[in-house]
Length: 467
Ligand code: ARG
Image 1 (cartoon, rainbow, N blue to C red):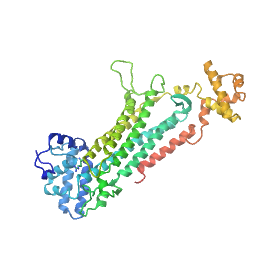
Image 2 (cartoon, rainbow, N blue to C red):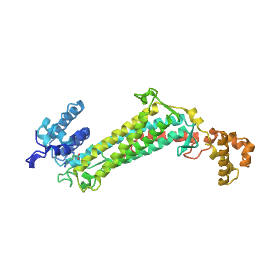
Image 3 (cartoon, helix red, strand yellow):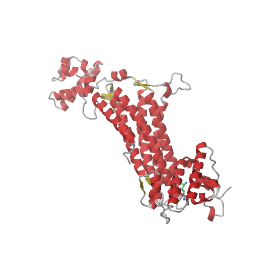
Image 4 (cartoon, rainbow, N blue to C red):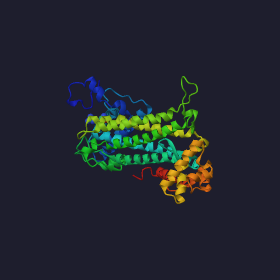
């Protein structure tokens, strides 16, 4: 077995247990694109400041291209002594190009290297998640426009409250996810700075051109303290939080989908492509995808809380504990990516039963509007509320609706009531009356959907506000 790159001062091989606990190659191998990009930028900079000849630089860049080609072709072979992706790439590069490969790590430590790689990964992951999130949001705005005038009960305490529209409800989902995109953009802004040049912890005595490597890697700025540069993982926590919050929102959407496609609600039928059968009950069609939107949020939350627990109390600067940053981050990003794709598939495969939703706008969901009509006629709110409550009880006892009670009976409880007030309880009129900004009126919902659509198309061209 070949020696570790750091074997100079050691006379014994690492114990098997140390090897097993210490190696990160099993999970950081996926950082190869970022590691190779970072090394290319570092090599070019070393040549720029005269620490590599142009021949050495070219040999390294060609060698790194060859290593990349092996990863792309799936032919890269990990060796026993490859502790992590950084060592694996450097080891292979040196095998391929010889002496120049041994100069690549000049002025660099795996500590600033891994911090750089992971920031690049976070940035790529955010771009990918944002793109998928925008896809879901665009679909929601389309559906919202299509269903802007379809009545649906709005629930509080999961009890029917007042009529809203399916479009307004879908736009509420969109509002949550829009904030999540904003959180992702915010996480990107803080991840997008270069720690390269922090070295192992104190910077470097070589005249490294930090701005040059940062520019080459597309970073928007530089970290300003080397001790912090190698040990800061706030950007990981920021992204984990953004992922956890978005996964949590998807879990709430998932739960509503589960509820809506029960026989009891029957507001929604999911397509065969997004449901599963039962191995025993031939009648079943289960919304597993939506249930897993609900279920997967738990692990993403665990990723966030678990990694914050790892960071807690860590002294400066780099400590090996920090190697524990990768698995939760990868898990959170992968899980959220799956969740967004599942959400998209659910929306594609959904049939909304709008007649059934309309029919559910019954059993007193117009009581608040009736109460407010009495207020408009001059009654104090409390008096109107009390009279309406009595009328609701009367209607329920009859198994009828408020507007179907005979007018004189209504008047015996609410003397200010008119036939017009009862006629106005028709659901479409109630919807149309909620014209405040952010309200339920179909016109407001259409406007909100169009505004969000425009904002989404705008952020597509400038994904992160230019930062
Ligand atoms: N595999 C390590 C990590 O992921 C790379 C940095 C190791 N640095 C060190 N001094 N051992 O954090």
